[in-house]
Amino acid sequence: MLRAELDAIDIKILRELQRDGRITNVELAERVGISAPPCLRRVRKLEEAGVIEGYHALLNGPRLGFDLVAFCMVGLKRQSDSDLKAFAAKVQQWPLVREAWMVNGDSDFLLRCVAENLTAFQDFVIEVLTADEHVDTVRTMLTIRQVKQLGLVEV
Image 1: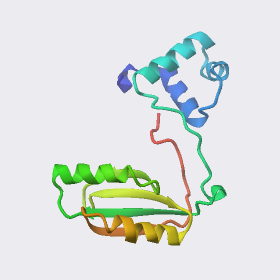
Image 2 (image 1 turned 90 degrees about the vertical axis):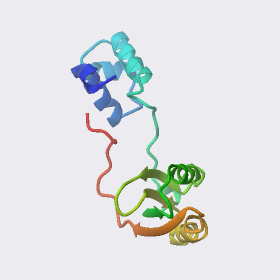
Image 3 (image 1 turned 90 degrees about the horizontal axis):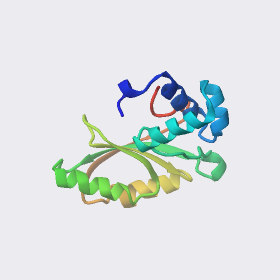
Image 4 (image 1 turned 180 degrees about the vertical axis):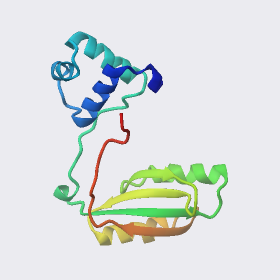
């Protein structure tokens, strides 16, 4: 489903679900100005088309004891397809890495990491990340505070 195939009601549905994924179908239908049965059909169609990938709870990391957020810019020794895929597969195994992006420029990957504290993050960087056979360079950035958090896509 392309954006061109989404009408104004679909866009409204997506905006409301990004704001509140726990909204009831009845409330969602009310907010977008249609009745509940067609609203539910539209949501299911958006899910089946892969426009809506899932629903998640947004957790407060510091309240759960995860006080550190950091970014790691990782350069690999080689940028062959097999090395890129092998590193991407390794990243999947590291719970401290919450998001990973393959990027171009000075680095090959950008990792968003969440840890309990600085010691846990440093241990990961030294014992896991820089020790990985594919890794050549790692540059880290510790965050101060998050100033904006939205859904990944503006609709």
